Length: 173
Image (cartoon, rainbow, N blue to C red; front, side):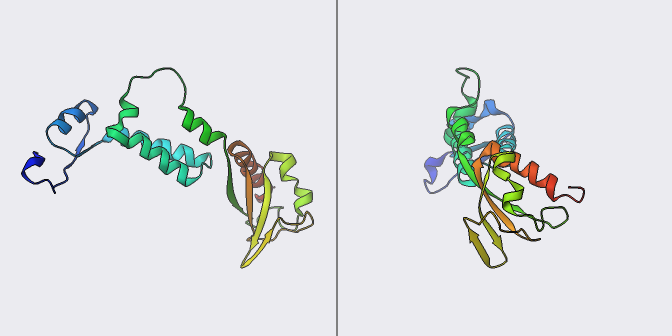
């Protein structure tokens, strides 16, 4: 694996065993991909997406986890809990889109009657209907099938809003 023969060669190696990372690096691998860490990162990514963490934050966190040969994941834990960076990302606000399917009772409801902020905490900052956008929509705006609600709030508020809106927009809503 020696890189000294040709410095332009970039050696990437896959391993199943985390304990082999350092040995493979010493043998000349530029990058070692550990299967068990990649599986953990994939799960981590999906969890963050479920909590509506913005994609740029998810990408940044996965870069941190993969950085320096997974050093963060390989290091002995200094305490319990989630890293401060992850906590800050989860606590920060975000935006997300909810599509009105038209199968439930959201259609023809006004934003005021819906009272999403009171029910779940998130605010509707815009409604997109086809090519038309209603930014800072009037409380009297009536929703139509196919509308997209642009929601803003904390991750928890967005999640509660999706649960609330799914219930209202379901056929039995």
